[in-house]
Length: 416
Image (cartoon, rainbow, N blue to C red; front, side):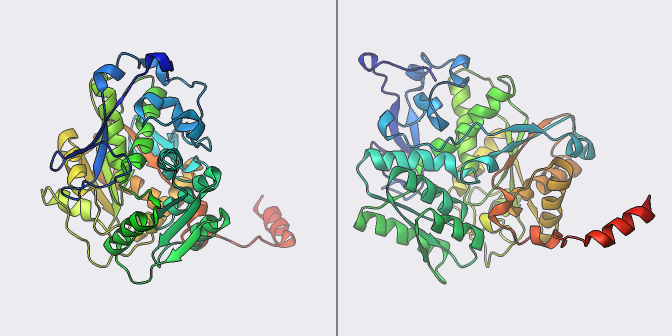
């Protein structure tokens, strides 16, 4: 993105703003509104930024990772911008699935190919960089796995201590990954998601640990770059739908924010509709949407093979339901049986090895087409949020031990 010289300093940040009570703050280390407790968002001086941002700004530049979009990210000095080369993930055409579904245009955005294997790296790059800029020595989060590994990876790159607080259902593969990066991984036993969240908030304040949880404004800023890349890779066009596996709602909100900023800057005149995909074992957004409510209710006893999207009381509930209302979006859920089948289908038909949570997007899309919510002449992007190696429990069901060579050659001969 175009560079502004220091003697032409562009102050792009307006500050943090709460969409619930309109509270404002200049303290970017906050992640909830000090007035009402709702998530806050970073806002920019869009008229001023728009003077420097053009289509050419979104072409690959010299800056690495998400920092090529620096004019639409918090102002962090180049020396403190941590990157592992996140972003710029492949947008691939899904030819076989497109045909099966009767669609004319279907793509998958492979955010599973980020450095630590999930979309979380986009947000961790920005969050950890601000922690370094502000002199923190420790970063942390509460996570069911993907964010844990991501914060640990970027914390290691920054030379910071990482503390990760995890629930019992966290896949072993993700715990191993976070531990290998050198993070201190702490099990939280029977604590609820709200209790874990409150715990990290209190520890962060008492022990000066910069917490980069799922609704952190800094995480939202990094994850919105998904939208910038998709828009650019489609030839500066906006797809009709983006299908997003959803847990806390932070990622879907971030992607919508990215598209909204493109519109505010005059670079596009419309936004895509958002389809939220959840597991039937934990679907607070789907329930609220189908009941026509503006707020989500806590989901009782969440349980699913899609462990990465088991947030029973998502903090971004109100603001994400508003996104659905504003864009004409929708929400659908998938059973464990459907998720397992879709995990296999992605792999066999498109060569995409994704974790079960990502596979909910395919199930939600198929149901939405069947019910007439999405028409076959509309263009669709599937968000592949995590790689299959993150959680091998479902994929292990498809494993077959190697066949003995002698048996195989004999069978092969007789089958010719």
